[in-house]
Image 1 (cartoon, one colour):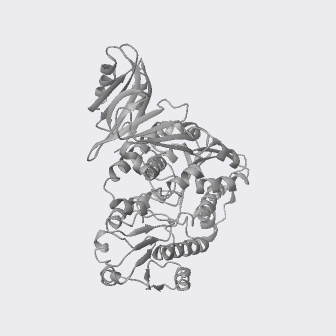
Image 2 (cartoon, one colour):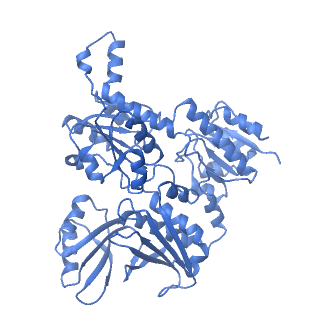
Image 3 (cartoon, rainbow, N blue to C red):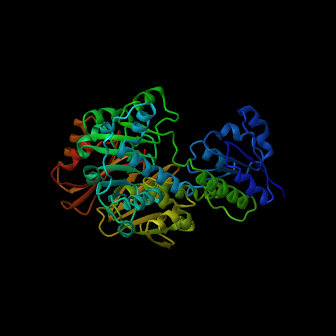
Length: 529
């Protein structure tokens, strides 16, 4: 059978060459308006895009023969994956193709900040000199803080180690062995912010990482820090950068990514500040990277069309699960449980046990993928999905034990997670109660019924009168309403676990106010909103 592929967004011509070698016809128009694309997309079994073309539900209505969408790169923000999944269209990307290019760009920005290279270039080209004005600093013996020690963060570490930098990192999902191999010391985030001379981030934009550096936490950062961001716009609070520079908290900033791309007029205005250098999202913009992703996506799509392999698929298992309605609720539960686990487990935990009973045991394989996806997606700098979750878990040294049984003890259908040995909360069990009704039913032997939704405050406390009132009072004083609560205890007057669903996200100060209450310990905040 012959297939046709449409190549858009100036994908490197190497992609067309690969398709031709595989006997697949590839068309590569110079430019195409949306109306024209809608008219012809029905003629193709696959399309390849970069970032310019948006593949949404409306476009997919016209794609009657489409089987595969390929993104020649990592980000898939311009592809409506749920809409493609519902249509049975496979979505693929090439997460490894730009690793070296982005790492090298990060290192280049570190050096550019240190030696005032952009400003010095402008001065000389305009007929100036002013050598003293551009006095720089060596990176040798300076402390580099890396947030996220995945592929790109690890490559940055390797390179800057050879420049003589002292390397520190925060990554709750990597192992000490991996960090030691790179010559990196793992520390808590607050400690990293307080010691780093340079800070580079290589994580997705999540509730945890959004506004990682801002006026709100300025007192935590080492004065005179230099910031670099080649990951996601918004990880540094853009509107706060100039005040942080002018108050002396930051020496300078280098940005390759922005909360809106291209930047809005407001962002362009603050980028004019002399202590900010900026590039137009060039992390993957090298000839080598574009050739790599063009080659990889062509090979992946060819394999998928020929039913040989589905490497790089972001929704392959999701498509399969659409035909199995019984599995879907358990996959949803697994992902939610994984998100909970990722937020309450100690940093750098690498031993987990997953147990499935009753109906859940039928889908154990994909449920483990769901648990790992929920855990890792909050802090891995690549796109984590049901297909690649195990790969990233293995890459980061996580040890997973899986067991199944026909029936649970109190509940027939259960997913149970056991977390390492040093966790404040070691064992959690959950079940499906109905459509969109997922609940934790046991924590460390305490019977508790907690819906997995919204924002959750969980803590251990002494079982004595007034404990709940003291927490509720502290929340009320900060205008935080309780939507639901659940209590579990060992026995009268012993230890208890309390979980409350609250109506807003908690900031650091609000959380600390609960931690300071007498008799309350092991306070955790979990966001599922």
